[in-house]
Length: 354
Image 1 (cartoon, helix red, strand yellow):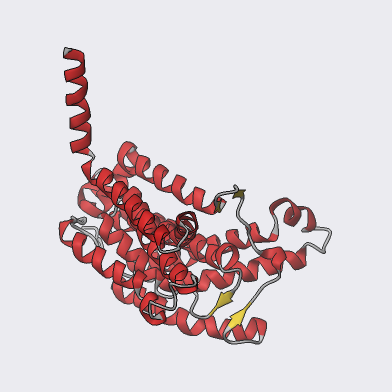
Image 2: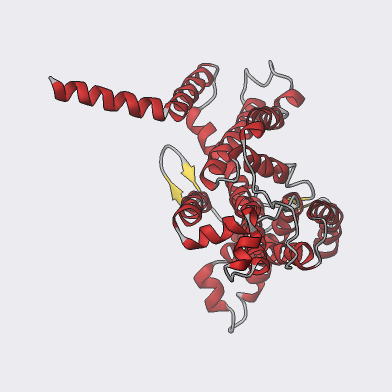
């Protein structure tokens, strides 16, 4: 009898400790049931949500680490745009190089799509490096630098579309360069990049909270003076996180064009860079929570698409109202959580060594 009482108390404590996630899971299940009753496929919604989640999660994880080190890069939208195009360009270039004896074994081993993803990571890292150099060593205003990246990308993407492919608005690459889902079941398809994003979130959480590297990163944003006194170069830590954040965002951008949409248009990011920033803010710079919020926003986008194409539903709900669902969700979530989050004391503040 006492063992049953102890077990009940233990289960009650667990339930109270995790009541937030439990209630969220129950609410999500109820929502899926309601949507299934109006003709929407729950598994289809989850599949679409996971796809839409992936670039948001990758960018949010990188930016969370970046901001924990004291840098704020709001240029994620611009990085998405540039690396989406860079991914397609790199994949098509790899397809051409596959005809040469020197590069053929490498291209066949990796596939043009994977090379395109790697090229997107590289270009994203380069943009992150430029942001880091301007912010850390030139002590430029980080918000202005991020705005500059976005403005530059909006014009540059159209210029490159016309210069490379002689069409300013859209380019559909050959099917050989796209990256299909690596795991397919009778119920749902999921991309290997989605699984990688989930793994990166878990590893980032462990590194930030369980290793000396994480302690160094957090100190760079919380107390850079103390970190400097301890003999660690604050500038190098911040520059490294800026490159990492850019590279992860670059993977998200290349994923959109190569593994999700199967092409590039000048508006491909469609505000997703700012939604990724909303994930960062809502999570309080925690990679695992960023992943959760990325799925919420991704699910909202998948829901809006499903409603707009489902017979019997799309005729009832106005088309333009449907496509505001992700943005309304973003504003609502940020309004709820932003006041409850604490950010590093030295965030967005250049460190000047005494």
